[in-house]
Image (cartoon, rainbow, N blue to C red; front, side, top):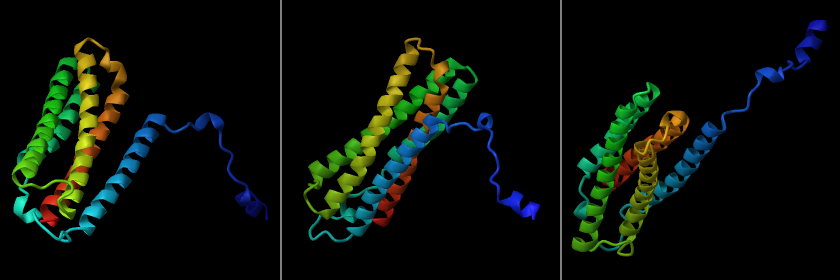
Length: 201
């Protein structure tokens, strides 16, 4: 009987052993979850309207694989990891080098996106109001591009203050969180690329 009673008694938790979750990790996790939900809506919308445009141009007629831009963006996930590890080992110059490379790769991706849009708008006459394809394409790809821009602004901020002598070694956690956001942007691009340039064509 005593064993049954003891089994029903909840275990006593020592307050000294319990800690609040890291607010930085919780914050970036909530951001990524929220942004994932937002992107999911746009991706589902794009998939739903595939092939439902009543007039051209159509994806198969105007879309080309953005190979170089994709390679650049996915490579930037590698370079930011190298930069982060250099910072962890106290190699400031190496961190700065790979951080700048990451920024350049991200900027190249944005440049290739801008050139693609110029080609589509000026030469192919595809705008956001042309048809359902134009509406969903610019909405989804533009949403991703806006997140790349935000990420690049933060990367530039970190790069600038580091070059001016700011002790970035004291901000390793924030660098890690920014790295997580950048990886999220890259993963989203894999999904967008698959949906728009492979499935949607």
